[in-house]
Image 1 (cartoon, one colour):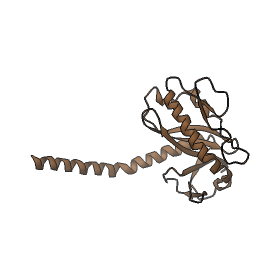
Image 2 (image 1 turned 30 degrees about the vertical axis):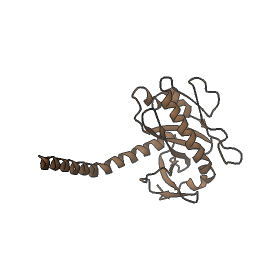
Image 3 (image 1 turned 90 degrees about the horizontal axis):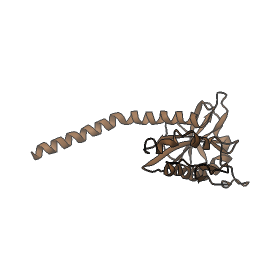
Image 4 (image 1 turned 90 degrees about the vertical axis):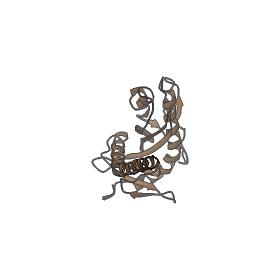
Length: 214
């Protein structure tokens, strides 16, 4: 019986490894395709994109579009190869688990143009309203992330407010019934934009379209 149990356990272990090896590349490719669709969603007008990785000196290097990591940003271009803006990742703890999303940044407007959730396990019908609630999504049509005159930091950090209490362009109206998740979204955007916007804004020229970089 002992040999039988060990044999079954070994067979199950091998089967799990084989399934992982077979499905791993497919899952990774699906995630990359989802990310590419999200880039064009959060940057209205963008039809193509290119990936850039933050290097140790604070600059950005072009990398293949299938790269992964938290140190990536994605430049979006329109049909005329004009830079629309950057798609930047943010992540944070929601009500149940980690939420991962992309948000679009416009250099000209110094504003967030939209968000797209890449990964979320929030409660269906409640926490997932950050993806579907039209009033909440309107927060990100032109969310202010402008910089101080010296460009060193955001003039105003993104701020969560209770539903209906938004008065300033850097505030995010929460969702009634999904307060924790909507507040988590605001917090992760606040932290991410405070880190990334002062870093990318002065380097706009680096992200201009270049033939062969995608």
